[in-house]
Amino acid sequence: MRRAFLMMALVPVAFTPNGGRGETLARRKARIGSPITHSDWMLRDPAPAWGPKGVRQILDRAKQCGWSRVYWRCFDGGRACYLSKLMEPLHGMDEDNYHRDKSSAWVVEKLRQYDWGSFDAFKEALVHGRRIGLEVHAWLSINEDDHGWGLTSRFTRQNPDSRWVRRDGRPFRSQQSFAFAKVRAYKLALVKEILAYRPDGVFFDWIRTGDVRDNPHTDREGVAIYGYERPNTERFLKKYGAEPTKIANNDERWVHVRAEPQTIFMREARDLIKKADRRIVISAMVHNPWGYRGSPTDTPYKDNLYGLLLDTETWANEGLIDEIVAAGYYRKGGGPEAAYRAMQKETGGKVPVWLFGWIGSAAQFGADIKLAERLGAPELLLWESDYIGLPPANAATVKAMRDYVGK
Image (cartoon, helix red, strand yellow):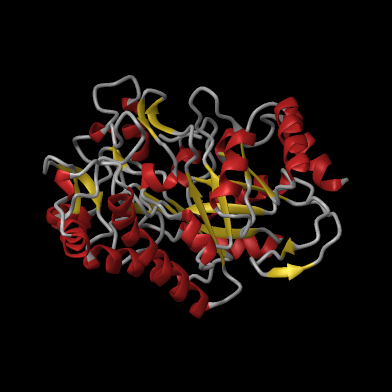
């Protein structure tokens, strides 16, 4: 359905695990982390057992690999993989879906047998994670209300008036705009539901952005073509006395106005999370200047501010995030090191930046870990956990990771 440690450099100032600043640390080995999409694991052959036993199998495998953090996916498109009162549980897909009449139609049939409303997978993950000494963070794909298509959220079906809008007035199929107060309130309510579980962290995934039939999301220069929703246009008109449709799409003033609602949400989310427990780590995954959506020629991103309307510089300056990573999708000229350095520059060195990697061979892991050590990244985020599979799959890669952690 979807796809995609390190050694801390000896530096004068290091970051504490909960994002605190100012503590001087000696060189130390850092984390390996990986995201877990439970539904993807259930598509594997062999798959884990269905129910609590299978959740434990997945986490035991993570522990076997030497990972110290996992990011448990709580939203699958617009459906919940926990017992939510706000979202429908994941249980099959809409009749109109991405896989229908394709070679991947088997995905729909296989997922039909699983109902995430039948038991609380996220609760089980947290309980077992604490039992075996594994941090479990809540992975929230906060910027989508569908995935591919066919996992549309109830909220976006009931609120078509608050979806993204293009310059010519055409709305997107599912994307909800943070420019509307009711959308921010809904997304914050989801965060509040998650906080009731007392996770070790909240991982905001901003790069997943709904129905792929709405591609492209940017113009040829990599600037977002959406954000022309009424609250944004009215705010710009009031502030600058001009209609946004009469100025260039890449006008710096207009880009900042469109980015402000996402920053407002992150302020509100930060306050909500830290009020619940200041130890909860807030992390975010955003894009890089070589990033893309769909294909390398479809939806290029200039950077996070212009391409995704995410003001990561302000987020870092205001302490809205504790850690950050740039997703590992690259057009020509990009790569893990370039993305890492671009992320450091965007955030002004004020928050730790992880290195993004893909689960592959033992040799690939070795290369990634060496790069992470050289860069001084505090974590290698290996995308995505189900690629490792259940034992005895990928024995050499598992051994390489475990040996590294055990050094």
